[in-house]
Image 1 (cartoon, helix red, strand yellow):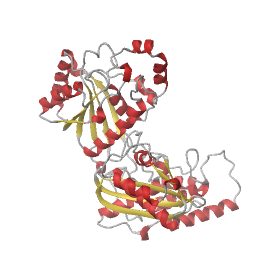
Image 2 (tube, helix red, strand yellow):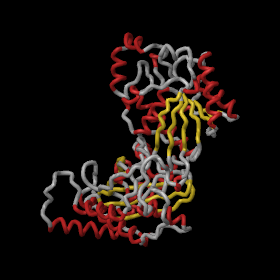
Image 3 (tube, helix red, strand yellow):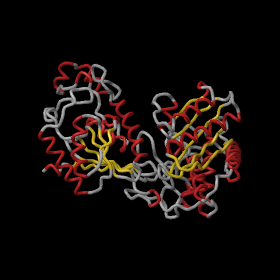
Length: 485
C-alpha cells in the first residue's frame, strides 16, 4: 500500500482575521513533495483555518490514491487530539469541518501525529503565501508552487548521497543539505521565529531551530534533504527580494503561520516585545476568588463540594481588589467560574467597573470527589493509596470519581482557546480558582504537570498571561496581593 504524509497548517492574522491555509502531500517512501495546496479564506479563526488546511490536504492525497495510507502531521494539538477522538469537538464552526475531514478516507487509513512547529514549516510557508496573496487582493496561485522544485531537490540530494561517502558524524547529525540550508538562512538574515500553538506555549517570539533532520524529526533523510534545499532556495529568494511577498514589520506574519514570505530584513524580535503587525495580545488577568471559611483551614474545596460563599474576610478582599483594578483601568470584560465564591468576587469588581459578568463553566475548580471539605492530613489518613497515586500521576483521580489534573488541563486548554479567540486584543479579568489559574500558567510556560504542586496562589491574588497573535504566550507572575494591605 502506498503511504502519504500530509502536513497541514492554517493561520489568522487577528484570530479572527484574514486567514489562510497551506497543505502539502509528501511521498513517505521518497520524501518528494507531490502536491501543494493553499488558499486565502477570508476572515476566520486559527482553528478554522487549520481544519480547512487538513481537509485540503486529505482531499489532495485522496485524488492521488484513495487506497493509500495517510499520516497527518500538524502542529495544532487541538486538531490532532480532536481528529484522533481523544478530545471532544464543541465549537460549531469546527464540527462540520472535522466531519468533512473524517469522511475523505476510511478512518483505518489515516493516523494523526502532533509535531513541533519547526517541523511544519513547509505548510506554514504556504499558509503565509496564501495570506500574503489575500492581502494583495489575489488568491494563491499554483504557478508559484515550490512542489516541483522540491521534488527536483530531493532527486538531486539522493543522487549526491549515493555518489558521496557515508557521513562520519554520530547518528542524528543534520544532513549536508540541511547544514547548507541553515548556513544560507543565517547568511540571509531570514531565521524568523516559527509559530506556536497548542497545548504548551513557548516564551514569546523566541527564535526556533530550523533543523530538518536529526533527533525529534520523523522525516526520512530524503525528505529532510528536500526540505533543506527548499529552505536554502527560499532564503536566497528572500535575500534577493524575489519572493514577491508583502514584507512584514515584525518577526512573525500571522497568528498561526509564519514563514519566509513575511520575514523582516531586520531579523526576528526576541523577548517581551510584540511586533507591530501582531497587534495587542489577548491578556487574561487571572484573579483567584477571595477567602471562604474553608480557605484558611486549607481544606479541599472544588466544584463537587458545598460551594461555599465568601467569608467576611473574602468579601473585604474582593472589594479591595476591585478598587485596585478600577485604579489600573485596564479591564475591558469580566468572565467568571459559575461557583458562588467566584461569582461574588467577580460581582464586586463588576460593580466597581460598571461591567457585566459572563459565566464560563470551563473556569470552575477541579472536582475533588470524596476529598471535598477535608484537609490534606485527613485525606492522607483516610485514603493514603489514592492520595499517593494522585501525587504521582496527573491522570489519577481523587477518590470517588473526582477530576484528574490531566482532565482539568484539557478543559482549561479548550477554555483558553475559546476565550483567546473571543477576546483577541483585549484585557479580560478571569475570576477562577487555584487549580485552573495554576494550569493557565503551567500551559503558558510549557511546564510539566507536577509544577502545579510547586506553585502557591494566595486568595484574591492577581497574575496575568498575554496571548499573542502568533500563538505565543508570556506570563506575568505577580501573585499580587498588594491591594490587600
